[in-house]
Length: 404
Image 1: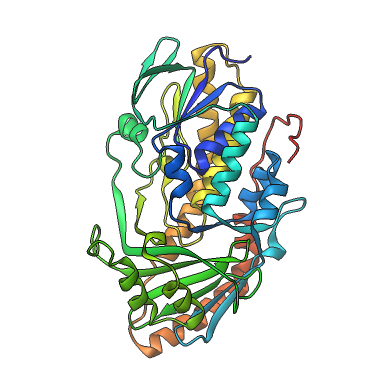
Image 2 (image 1 turned 90 degrees about the vertical axis):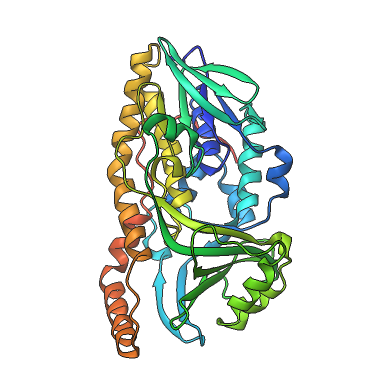
């Protein structure tokens, strides 16, 4: 049964828009409320992200496969180098995608936002820009959601509002956040000369612990990242981001260093890397969470956005299979979604935390031994890890496919 009131989604990021499209695909009413204006989204500095096959495939189920493949670059392998350009190890990924799955993809973050927003517009999903969700109150027949400019009523509320989620704080109070001790610069630069097609290149300088990566994202463009250890909240003087990024990049090979130097200051993003301590309760009554609001994790394995996509399609699947004619039925469907996701997300998060917090040897002998152990581990565990990581979510309801 279709609920009389819409399902309200707080946040128009990857998780929020995927959730909205998946709900609409099942014929369920949904509305999205987003703090940013459409202009702020369109003019935000660019960066890239990886949609591993476990995320690109469910987006394909929503009818976005052809658009993604046209806008993005496939990923078949990752190569990791030291600061002199000597390969430390390589990880194959493409051989371990599942049958009938889409390939893993590197895509511009704003390109993905454009694809998701355009699909919402085409499919009649309202996205209310410039209207932040500021709180909510459960009622006898649903939820009242406070947004900038008033109150809206819904059958349910989905918090997709990121690592500093208002919905999460209202639901659980302050969930402790962990700072990795690492800050990052990100940017996008024209041109893919010197890159290996379909292969992200990662670099690490062992003496300074400065790292980075560069990878094609489609449209003859490359995304780059720089990472270094810094206190949380530390910032340069206005306009000093590019100078600092160029200085850090001097430790790394020209294929990355030159792209940083060609990126203007206004096109560079700086982000400190935080994640949430694990918590297993994502919802209560007609309220639940998706993406970083539910389980913010380190970005080292590129699974943050991917797990948000998985959340969205599984949440919609659970609601489509539930009895939505009563508040109790809606709540039961949300708890079913959470139950189906917990073990999967916990495992992915554990892998990400393990990689992000691994101790770095200080001596040359220790680094040599760690390199040998890493290569041995990958040789043994590569297949099983990547097969499990790229497993698309299992669904129970199969609506009519949507054309791309």
